[in-house]
Image (cartoon, rainbow, N blue to C red; front, top):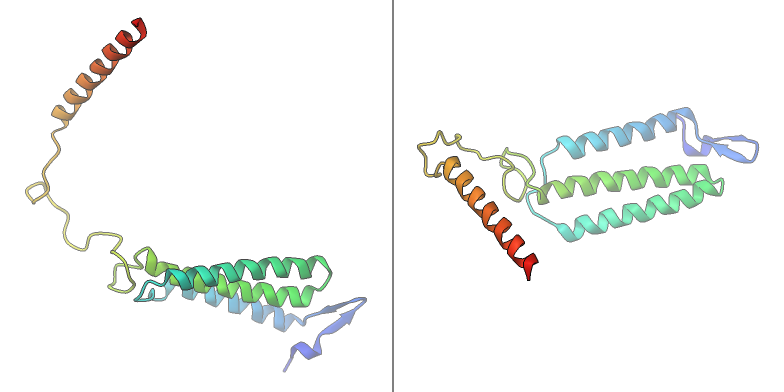
Length: 152
């Protein structure tokens, strides 16, 4: 079994084995998939979502600092942890925006669950002719007010 302690030294840098790199990529791919496909949380937690998101952004900045100083292994581990945090924040955020339509997640459903009204329902149909007539009269009224204001 390959471990981080079996990293290979090349010059001044320590290189992670290929197996570890593949494992990191697999963990991120599974996390992104789970954040998108898993049932959203049943309770809205905007405070926790913000904390996780903010912490992930800080970890990204710290990882960038380590990577820019040539400490690639630790920077890579921080990038993985920050990516996991972003996945968790995205999953938590799904409760805030309504989750999915399968009765999971907080908030309102994104789409109505009942059948669409066919015109005879309780929603009044728009009278587009009346609307257009009102819009034209309003435009004429504004045009006459604008020309009379400029004469003063």
